[in-house]
Image (cartoon, rainbow, N blue to C red):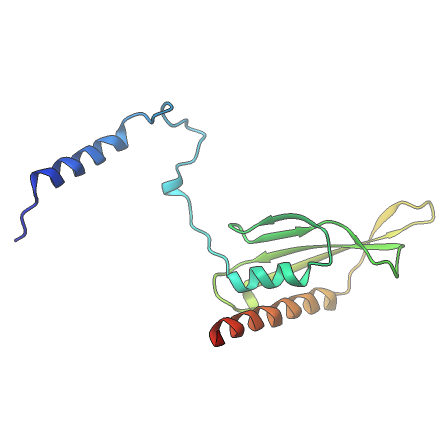
Length: 147
């Protein structure tokens, strides 16, 4: 059996006592989450980088690397100024898998008055973007393995 030194026992006791004492800047508020209890969400780094790289031609509205969500702003193709696209990418897994990725594409076209109205998007468009992201993620992974 191993003996614990008195110093280690005191340090451990003080550490445990500190858990129940108010913090330096006051006690924790009930509406402030405790970071030690936060659910850990991990996102595949290759998918994350590949999604940002694949959609780099579109303006970025929001990117949450902890939640795995990328939202672009509206993009107008100079060759089709009467339509615009927006994407939301969800990275759902920490593994590099096809089902760990979900892409939603939104499209709007100009009406006769010049206002933007929602338009349908071909399902293949979302699949094509997902495949492009997956291909790029595999390229990133292979370049790290070889390097």
